[in-house]
Length: 115
Image 1: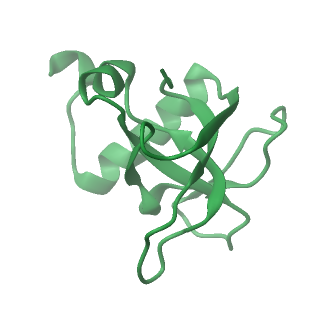
Image 2: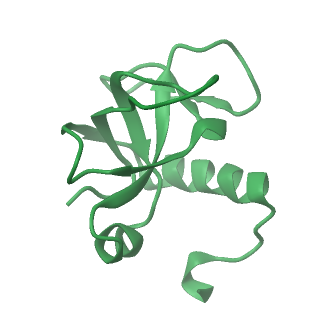
């Protein structure tokens, strides 16, 4: 099972407009309970070498994966139906920072432990 904070390479195909596509790295942002409960559906932000934008967050320099996490392009993907490969994991501190950005994007002021 993939875990929150994992960087995986997964197929983002079947997109429209400005969504990221193709087989590329993505950061799993859904928490482990969600990942288990939803039977293979995970929430993933694509990683790309996109232009600077306030919601494009640079990955830490100590990772083998480089690029920016595109927080505005979060996608729900089925890891049981799509090919994916585990690459590495980010620190708990980095995934917390990304989670805080995602919460701010949707106006959520609740901790996961409160749900």
